[in-house]
Amino acid sequence: MPTLLLLRHGRTTANSSGLLAGRAPGVSLDEYGTTQAAALPGRLSGIPLAAAVHSPLQRCAETLAPLLAERPDLPVHVDERVTECDYGEWTNRALKDLADEPLMATVRTQPSAVTFPGGESMRAMQARVADAARDWDARLGAEHGPDAIWLMCTHGDNIKAITADALGLHLDLFQRLAPHPASVTAVRYGNPPLLLRFGDTGDLAEFVPRTEAAERDSAEATETPVGGGA
Image 1 (cartoon, rainbow, N blue to C red):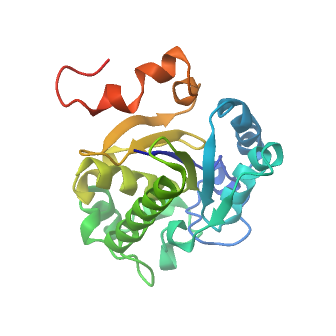
Image 2 (cartoon, rainbow, N blue to C red; image 1 turned 120 degrees about the vertical axis):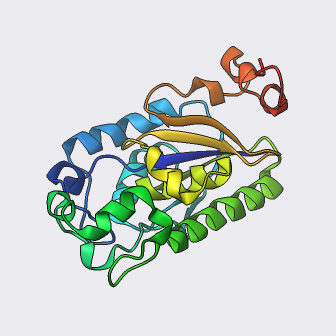
């Protein structure tokens, strides 16, 4: 079964300023986010990526730019389905001000009931991003075989939503997940789907073929439902 590496974009000027960027244009990586992006080729060194899929927003393209400079032959696909949630009237507002909005309590505790004013519901966001992840996983598995490894660069809430879907968690529990900027979350859509990593900001050698770490993290070692695997 293929392995999906979910990459959250690097830290942005909105992240460091405490703004809810949403789909606002012109949101770029800040200095630290640029450093995180520059480290990505090294973290993924030796991992044979079949493709990279990313959100159309600037911060995701900037995060992938150093990797693509080193891997000019890597197939790249922009998918509108994995863009940021449409926060409507909340877009570009300060998070400290949004904390006083009555809807924020529902966002924290019952996101399945939330539709942002003038924007998208969180249920619709989860449906589109989970569908996109599963569609690409099936497509790339058919094209490159069951050992394919592929990368999706997207946004924090999207990664939480995809992870919750893979784990069979209700959307109302997804706020318990917190992937940091530039972190990698690894999912395999097996039977059952497996969460191999969550919010990893360090070494990814487990996904390099023919290494001791990769043998421990192979599909065969993680498919068994008893005994904890290798």
